[in-house]
Image (cartoon, rainbow over all chains, first blue to last red; front, side):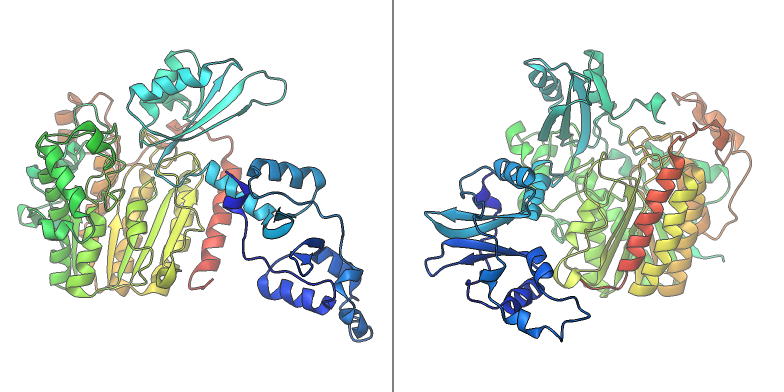
Length: 215
Length: 385
C-alpha cells in the first residue's frame, strides 16, 4: 500500500502572507487540523497546525481586545523545515515517520511540489483495510514457534478444507515469549473443524476456544 | 390474546440439506413441529404448506447469472472453479442435487407467510424453515443460498407498498439483508448479534448506519462474546421499542435464529432459553401496537438442533398463537421418541437450569461494554449524520 493510494489529493493550502484569521476559518469549515503553506510554485515552505493557532490567538475571553492578532500573517507562526514524504513511499514507512516525530500529518511532495497530504487518520484507515473484515469471514488465532515455514504449515491445513483466506496478520507474542501469533480471517461460518485440525497438529489455537472451555 | 396464526411447513423444506455432517440441519424444524404437536399447541388447520418461489421472485434480489449457477450446481453441471466466484462448492455451501429447487421452496415458504400476513388483518405467520439472512445478490454465504428474508421484504414492498421493520436476533450479523436495503429508508434493519470481532461474518458494527436516503435506517447491536441472558435482554428491550416507535412500520419481519444459546457450537454467546421466551413477546407487542398485527417470523441459525432449537421455536409459536407460555417438564412422549436419535441427553424441562452453566469471570466487564453499546445506539435513533 503506497502513500499515493491513501493520501488526500485535494489539499487546502495557505500563502505565507495570508492572515491567521483565514487559517482559522479554513480549519473550522473543512474540519482539518493541518494546513501546508506554499509559495507560488506549490513548494512547501511551512505548515500551520491548530495548535500553532491556538497558542497564537488570544483566549476567547480576550478575543475582542486583541483583534489585530487575527490579521497577522501565517508566516509569523508557521513551522519551517517541514517533514514530507513521497507518493511512492510505503504507508507503513509514513506511519513510522509520523510516530517517531510525534506529528499528525505529512505533506506529500513530488518534484518539489505539493501533491497531497497524509494524516494519522489516513494511516489508521490503511490499517483498517489491512486487517479488514470487508468480506464475510471468521477469525482464527494460532500461536506458532518463531521459525521459518510456520505460516505455510497452518495455511496448508486451511487449504485442505477448501476455505479461502481473506487476510493474514503475523505479529510477535507477548513480551518474554519467542512465539508468533498468526491471525487469519477465513471465508467460512464454521471455523471449528479447521481449528480442531490445527490443534491436532500440535499448535495452540487461541481462538476459537474449544466448546468445553467456552468460558 | 388469541390470534389467527399460521405455521408454514411441509416435508419439502427438509430437502435443503448440504450433507449429513453439515451443521445446518432442517430436521430441527420437524422436531419443533413435533414438540408442538405433543403439547397439543398446533392444529392441522394452522399448518400451511409452502409454495415454490418463481425465478422472477428470486430476481427481486438475486442476479440472473447467480440463479443460473445455482441451478447448474444442482444439476451437477457447475465446475469447482465456476462455483467459487458464486460461493458455491465451498465448505459452507457445498453443491448438492436440486439445490435450486430446495432453496426455492424455502423462499416460497417465506412468501407464503408474507401473503398470509399481508392478506388479512391480525394474522401472524411463522416459517421456521426460512431466515437465511446471509445470502448476497450474486453469492452464497454462511449456509445461505437464496436470501428469503430479503426477497420477502422486496416482495412486500412492491406488492403491498408496506414499510418493513426487520429485526434479526440470530447470533450472526444479518449482513445479506442489511446490505440489500442499506440505501432504502422504507426498510429498517435491526440486528442483535455477537460482535464480529471474532464471529462470522465480521460486520455489524454500530457505525453501519445506512447510506444516502437509507442513512439512519440500519441499526446494529453487537454484543460481546459470552454475553448472558440479563445483558442480552437488557439490550433487546432498551433498543427495540425505541426503534419501532421511531420507524412506525406497517409490517414486522423477525429473523429468529436460535444460536445465541450457550449450547450452540458455532457461537460464543451464553444465553439460555430465557431469551427465547422473551424475544417473541416484544415482537408480538410491536406487531399489534404499530402494524395492525402483521408479523412474519422466520427461523435462521440454530445448530444445537436437539437441546435448543425445538424449545426456542416452540416458545415463539406459542406466543404468536396466543397460547400460555409453558413451564415445567417437556412432554414425556416427545423426549422418549427422540432421545434414541439424539447424540446428547435431551432436556427434561422447558427452562434451562442456569446453575449448570459455567460462571463467566468477565461478566461485569461484558455487561458494562454492552450497556455502552446500547447507550450509543439510543443516542443515534432518529438522528442524521
